[in-house]
Image 1 (cartoon, rainbow over the protein chains, first blue to last red):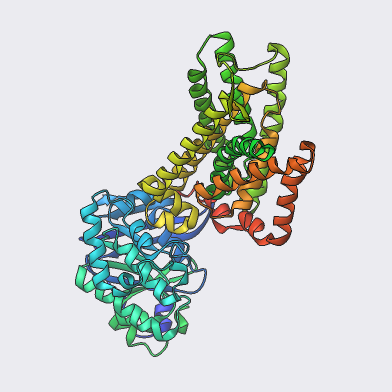
Image 2: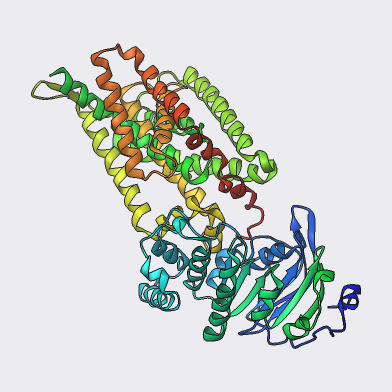
Length: 255
Length: 307
């Protein structure tokens, strides 16, 4: 990653250049887009085991597209994606879920016409062992008791914040090692965002879960992430640790 | 006594409607495809069974199974090679493009079958001895008994598969929320193919059973499929298989009992009148079938998915 005019203009922080050799996820120079049109260019990033990494950027910067290509929903036109030392470039979402990658989209993140319990069971769609499913269900119920209390309630009748918790529970049911979160604060009351982010951080710490989270709410994001990538117009323009970024007086010049 | 006879007639016809409505309704519900070329798989199954029994001396039961398999394969091929690839190419107009393709398939298929029938002569399934049956003052034929039993057995099997298996959970996931279904690891493309297979198989069985009573024509099943469409709409966007089936049965009984007061020639008016009333009273239910975000993005995601 090269330091650009944005980092220079943004302040005195030095771009982070940490290790990427033992990364759980490493994206090398990926270009992707829709049809023949590229919208993300030569993107590289890495996520260490147990690390929470954020990507921030303006609307249309290419954050979601980056997440979609990692998860296999979009095809990489160029570059390589390595997860657990395996090349997973253009691997199907189904195989990525089986491999321990879970995605929570920014919208439509629950099965609204199904019960909470059915949502959680769908999270474990690729797990065939009923004992493993029961174990995971018990674990999710322990972490998020509301999902046990309202097991038979239709997901669509939950509030936005509760639906977010359900989507987290659903993702955990697949037994992930890497969680991809697309704008988790979207559509949630500000008061709930703090507790939601605290829950995400707790999952990462307690379960050794790696998290790659896209977010526009920088203040909240910096409370839970270890590192941040800044994206503009389809490319990363800056990479900093959360501590480095917190020292900035303002963030608007990053967008 | 007339009421009892008409009720039995309604149960027999309603069972056939239920079978077709479940097949057509599943395709519509899960994939959002307005698959009116369903008629072709229905007629093709009947035609295949008729050729097998008349030209090759196959038994009715073998012909029924082969007819069902032919319908299944044709349905799956239509989805795999026509509808699915069309989606991403048509972009925002995917639904219209797929409907137009279905209309084209229907027209071409009916034309081709018409030409074949002109050259090969009447096609009717032989090898099944149709015999009259009577319980008290109620009359029917033995084929009617098989039609009711086979239809409901298949409906129950499909309901159990969708309700109690992992495959069923995947189907419900894709139907409910395509985005999330991909996120939890379901493969929409595979599910679409499976649903086209199941739906076409049910239509194929219906086609063979009907063609045992009456000769196959190029437009065989056209009326029945329109009834199936009506039932699928009346049952509701997210109706269960059993609910669709009972709406089909109810419509069959209602249609039959209506003959107490009106001539059977008015039957289609009654059925489509119901659809018209439904569409007028609950327009959003009808429109929502074509506006679900899952419908458009399903095909669009085809080229994006690695699998």
